[in-house]
Amino acid sequence: MGIEGPRAAKQQAAKPPAQPQAQPPAQPAARNQSSSLRRALAVLDHVRDHADARGVSLTRIAEDLGISKSTVLRLAAPLIDGDLLTRDRETGWFRLGHGALRLGQAYLSSLDMRSVAADPLRRLQHVVGETCHLVVYDAPDVVYIDKVENEHNVRMASRVGMRMPAYRTAVGKAILAWLGEDDVQDVIDAGMPPRTERTITDPVRLAAELERVRLSGYAVDDRENEPEVRCVAAPIFDHTDRAVGALSVSGLTSRMTPARVREVGPMVERTGLDISRVLGSSRPRRRATRLEIRSESRSESRSESRLESRSESRPESRADRGTENHGGGNLP
View (tube, one colour):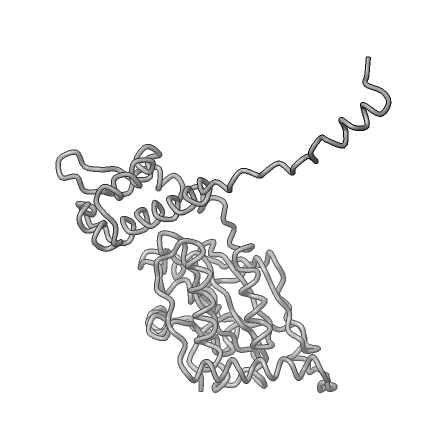
C-alpha cells in the first residue's frame, strides 16, 4: 500500500534529486594494444629487411629500433607463436617463419594482373593520349588482356583475346628481352615470317634488338607490325622477377614521332615497374628524370586541352583505319 496525502508529498520534497551516474574512465587497453601491434610489426619488418642467411641478432633489433631486448622478446613472442618469426635455439637469432611465406603466397594467389594493372594503365593513357594495351606471354605469342582506347577518331584494330607473334611486337620483345636463351630460341624455331618490310626476321638482329631493350628499359616497334604505327612497351615482372607480361602505348607515326617515343618510353617503363612491384617483384623503381617530369606535364596539358575543346581531326587514310603495331625496331 503506497503513502498518500501531505506526508507523501513532504517525503518526496525531502528526497535529493538523482545525480547522473558517472562514466568510468576510458581504458587505455585498446590504445596500448594498437601500439604493441605496431611495434611488433616493426620487429617483423626489421627481420624481413635485414636478415642474412643466419638471421638477425636480438642485439641488433633492439639497437636499430631503439627498444630494450626484453621488449623485443615480448613483441616477438606472438610472432613466433604464429610462425611469422622463428628463433634459432643455439644462436638466438631471428628469421622469418613459414607463416610469413604462407601469407605471401596467399597474397600473390589473390592477385590478377589485369585488375592490378587497370588503374595504372588508365592513368598512363590519360597522360600520353594514345591507345594503351596490356598483354601476357603465351609462347611464342603475346595475348591481349586489356585495352584503353585513345581520344582520337582513329581506333586500333586490336581486341582483347587477340594473339600476336612476340618477335614482331614491342610487347613481345619487352618480355623476350628478360627471358632465357631457350625461350628466345623457341620463338625463333616457331618461325619469323615478315609482316611488313621492316619486320625483323634475322635471329642475329633480334638478339641485338633485345640487348637494346635491356639497356633502355623499354622496347620500340617502328612499323614492324603495321606500316604506319609505332609502339613503345615495357615488361611486367612477377614475384619471382620473371617477365610474364607487358604494357604498351601505340599510335600513328604522325603522332608517335621518334622524339615522342623517347619521351613516352621511360613513362611506360616506370608504369611497368609500378605494376611489377604490386605483383611482388623486387626490381627497383627507376627515378623519374627531369625530362620525363616535364614530358608528363606537357602530356597532361595536352590531354586536358583535348577534353576542353576537341578539334576536327583529319580524314582517315586507309593506313589509319584498323591498324596497330606492337613490334620493335630501330627508329630512323
